[in-house]
Image (cartoon, rainbow, N blue to C red; front, top):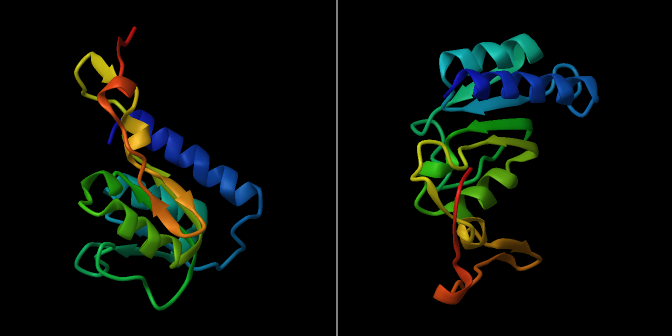
Length: 143
């Protein structure tokens, strides 16, 4: 987590709160937070913030039986081996999901433009994987 990550998380939490998307005393949770992320959540939503870890909720294993009004995941999904299962479980466990994950930090200067396509796209029948052929993968140098 960088200082910029924390600033952007704080901005997103303020925006969610000011828009009234999450009501006062809502059920709010954050998965595997750094201490600074927890304090940012607590500053925005008070004592209603619940902290979860993989020991409490393995997002690849199951959905939660109780629904959250807001779940926050910062740098969690990049570690999952089964992103489609993890996202399905999380989305079935909350009304609003706030995700903050890395895109290209600490990467080689060559960036594969097709990386985002690999993740797949949401359809009515669940996750549908896109096929990427060598001809569709292009390289460009980041400036």
